[in-house]
Image (cartoon, rainbow, N blue to C red):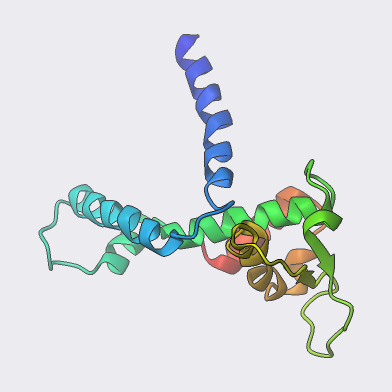
Length: 160
């Protein structure tokens, strides 16, 4: 019974940590390289290989491990979906606005335009970083209908 309670608590805590990470981090590239180096070593240990036997990408493909940057992109896009469609406690108008100019090459009708800001904490924030990823999604992913369907289509689009 205690073990099952710990599993439930682990499931509750994990998404909160993943979603909290991309909120504001001006040193994102440095952190990604540091954590990716840990995953590089872990993949070598998991496959019991020496350095140079197989490339990191091949090891990740063999183990079916996505990269840290693709996991962060996935979690950021899920949070963006929640904000855009009102499934989050955050107010959409406070951070985003829909693009007024509809391009003929638009992927979907939910294109975002970020409000301008003069402070660096907003410039490097989650809200500015996620917009380019969001605007490049195809319409069948963004207009999925439900959050669970969006997650499934997003995973297949990002090849996770």
